[in-house]
Length: 180
Image 1 (tube, helix red, strand yellow):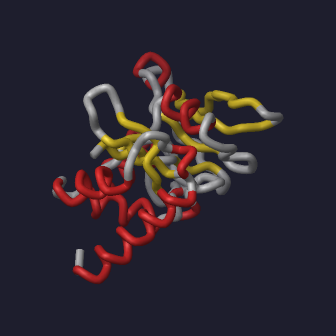
Image 2: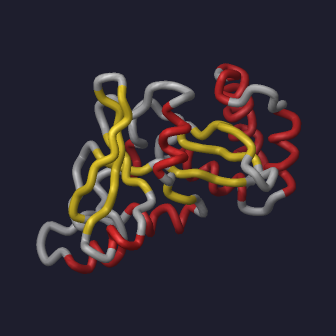
């Protein structure tokens, strides 16, 4: 990243951090920024999250002490929609293939798909995916049978659903998680 891009991204992240203090009680921006600057590739991943509409923000510290950044856009990031679940699902489609897969895009960005637990935690910090849905990390026993999981929030509740992994929709994307 160029120096100017880096400064712009850090200023954006800092402003979002300050605007949404309820997402990270007890965490200071200077500590989060120091972590970002110390970890190679973290800013590049966050830049990709930002560029695809994710609006990443700190949502906690994990059990290993890593700062957890997550996409906090109100709806599933616009630049990451209309994707099937993974590369196996993409290869299985014979017609009308989507541009790619959520799992491959997450990998290329250096982020993880949210687990069901992480998605439910995110929903305690605000109301997300009221009109869209987001693929989540799918257990092997479900994926082996051809399925994949996604979540959304409707009627004040978080729902976990299943679909064929090869399906894709204009209103379904994925949210990324980055540990720094």
